[in-house]
Length: 201
Image 1 (tube, helix red, strand yellow):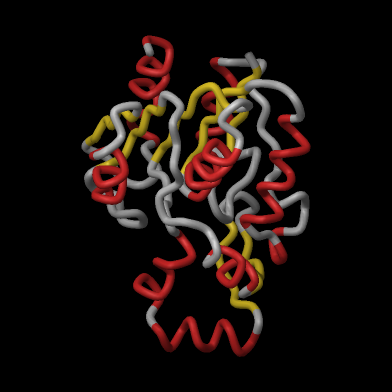
Image 2 (spheres, rainbow, N blue to C red):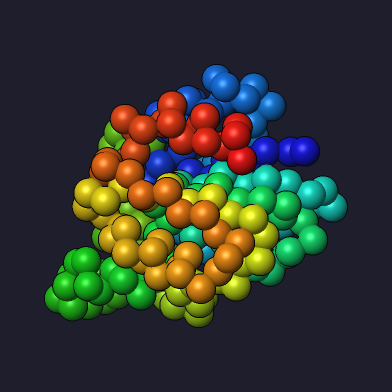
């Protein structure tokens, strides 16, 4: 079965996690979800990319942060094409939570200017991101109706995405196994454990 890794926001195919998993599973596919245009990337654009990439196959999706949320959105919409999900610190409802994270003044400035600068971790540079990412993201549900077997890893010390979002998501879904870890958002110190758990499940 095809295995596809979905990177997080302002990250890319060369991220530490992507490379870690690619070393263990050489068949792992790691697309650039922004298609080379980070500034204008949106959830809708990334869902279209996944639709083309997956085609008529059945796949397992591994997603980190925003990539985890994207994986859940895609799985809920294409239950026959996604067999299983592995989500790491999934950023459920990201667009709706940006106001709480950045504040109303920053969000207003972002909307008025049309873009804001962010640090692109994947390219180690400052990059623009369009407000379209937020406007587009507001149409999507916070917790996608995922029915497939799902394994979630989330750090209790996550400084970017509150682990209690994953707790809430898993609470009413018997198909979801949640593993809480003593780690931060990146989970880099727990990747061996994550890989071993993936192999066992």
